[in-house]
Image: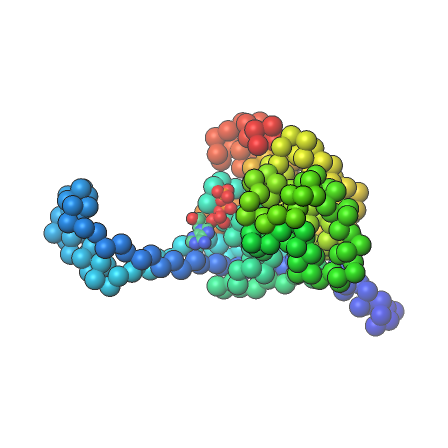
Length: 285
Ligand SMILES: Nc1ncnc2c1ncn2[C@@H]1O[C@H](COP(=O)(O)OP(=O)(O)OP(=O)(O)O)[C@@H](O)[C@H]1O
């Protein structure tokens, strides 16, 4: 018979690292209507009476609100140690899903449970403050990821070294960085936090050829060599999905189309998109 601690251990080992249940996310966007001059109005295409009345009404209200259903009832479980690839056309909802798992976007409906420390490597390097230096952002990034000040200070040299960004530049405000330098710092911070769950959104395309190689080697170390880490990998580089992932999902217009082995998912996605044999390869990134 199993003891309580056996049961607890079993539950811990079998609990998903990420569970996403019936997740829907709707963005509400308020657009301020600009006040047009008579000359600007005259330049707009001719509208019929109904369109003119509707436009006048919007203009008088001063703003318009519209909604985008970016995710519609998505359910997926990711077990600890899994490397889940996420594919889908532009606007499919991939980044929205990543932001939701990272806790940046609250679900409109449904539930997300993440077990362990999450580190995000999102395309836009969210969380960095452009007014602060690279060094300060590295320290703050570490604190935000739950490391102690001593832990970050201990790792600072290694992180700074990994970025390959020269020290004098690391002392300057990040708003002065080139996009590649910015990505290098974002990547270095995220991969050195030893997270339980690592979210990588199009980050392998960051940086120049040399950094890309270093980033890929680091990803390999994090993903392939350390099998305890759970990884979500969003990329249009389908070869990476085949090479690094052991599971994949395909999103389309906010819906989960398929979930299964990376090879099957990539093939189904390519067929749907009308491209063959990884036309969109990593070399194109
Ligand atoms: N902040 C936002 N406000 C309003 N709509 C948004 C916002 N961010 C994304 N969207 C919309 O939500 C949908 C999903 O966008 P998302 O960025 O998640 O797609 P994606 O699959 O990551 O696309 P891509 O491959 O182009 O990066 C799109 O229709 C997009 O226009």
